[in-house]
Amino acid sequence: MNREEKRFWFVFCNDQLLIEKTEEGYRVPYQKETPIKVPEWTRIHELALFDGETFCAYSIDKPVTEHEHYTMIGLRASFDLLPRAMYLMAGKAQEIIFWDKNNRYCAACGMPMKFHTAISKCCTGCGKEIWPTVSTAIIVLVRKGKEILLVHARNFRGDYYGLVAGFVETGETLEECVQREVLEETGLRVQNIRYFGSQPWPYPCGLMVGFTADYESGNIQLQTSELSAGKFFTKENLPDIPGKMSMARMLIDDWLKKY
Ligand SMILES: [Zn+2]
Image 1 (cartoon, rainbow, N blue to C red):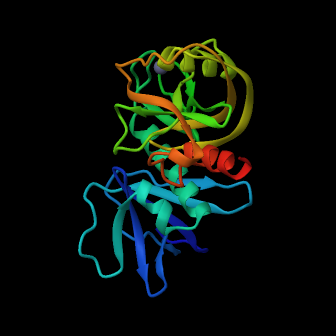
Image 2: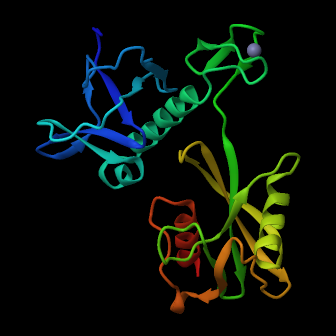
């Protein structure tokens, strides 16, 4: 592929992102042509950003190893090595590749889907149009006096404690989801639910919406199928908490700053 202008290239092998080794560190390849040979039949996604930049993304079949200029790292690990804007773009690229791979045929009639725009597909049979799916989840920091509610979910990869979180259900507002998740997972009722911020969570296609809330009533009764531990902690006795890239950590850091 020949190009007039340089582009950022996001090349994935599953969740592994290709990055270039330079004397200053690592960076996303920025050049006119594809950094790694494109496998046959592979679509190169060309995505426009609202600031006028475009970037390209495609996936390869085998990871790149022992290459002079490139190496591959997990998307999560790229958070620590790349500038934030690049990490976010890599996440978007990964979401588009994931969506493309998982939507080759129409869910309604089974015929092949074809691209209609850079971010939509149309069914060649019935004309059904689809866009990338976003799975919305809430995460909430529950305060009780000088304490916050921290939980250890069974699916956490490590011993750290995080915040109550869960996927939004059909027909539910975000605030109702906050109330339901806290009640289901811990048996507590909360009030004063306030929006905090949001974050794309490309693992593989999430949107994390953060809230704060105050304890209202109830005693902790953990949903043991989901959580293995959970209680209120003060600033002085905080356990290990999630890494800087997560919304949970942003909420906890914000609370620590104000406390
Ligand atoms: Zn169809």
